[in-house]
Image (tube, rainbow, N blue to C red; front, side, top):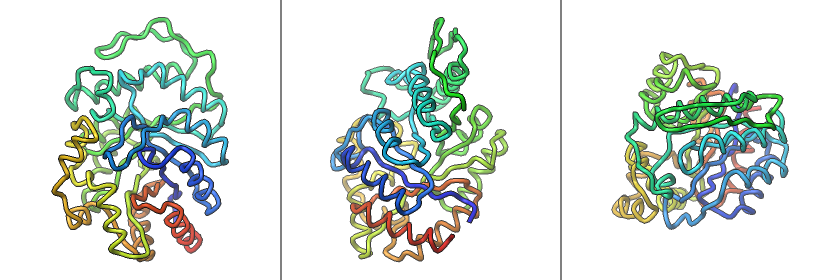
Length: 320
């Protein structure tokens, strides 16, 4: 088994303390790394959490000894200069244990500052500007930058990490994978049907991406009872049926709930991999590995995270 298997903390769900417990359990069951999401809002009112990722990361990385990554967006809500300072601080405190995936953003989180929401091409261009600013600041340079989206004047970080954290891009579409590949150290995406995943990877490679640095966020649902696993995936994560393009445009948790009001469990089963059988989850891990992902992060959307972590821990023992 080539891929490292990690655990993803959905900060849109559970309390900060509950997530810290999940991290401890994941380390005990020999997961290799942890990731988390940087949301201002949850996807649904039902999820009910609004945790700031950066202070939580400081506490979580002190809780265990695993490497961590965060998926975030440098936008008006959180300027690239500020994100660079966050990255530098955590990278200095926890050497070689921190990496970042930068995405173009979602209206759900970014509308809170009431700025203009650009179309996708503009969001990708904005992300490229942000990555240039962040990289230069992390090198310790004094940055002067005048762009279409960001202006930075005479700005320097006085605390920079000895080892630069890797800057990945987060992408869902083939177009974004191709366009953003050459400005990143790697890429993170989500589970797709096998042929679609292969097309995504091809687009990334053709854009100049490094196939050795591909990361997968594997959304799944596990419960010992199949019907319960399906129900909890539908209850907690039915917005997945909307697809990435539409998800990036909707503004509030209430709007998401309205958009998926009539979605049924059968539709969710077509999008999320749900099973009460650990062997199915093992088969899916082998599929992800065959695609060439260097890291696979399990994002379980059922209710009992500790049970899922323990089940995957037993699978990892078999793989070892």
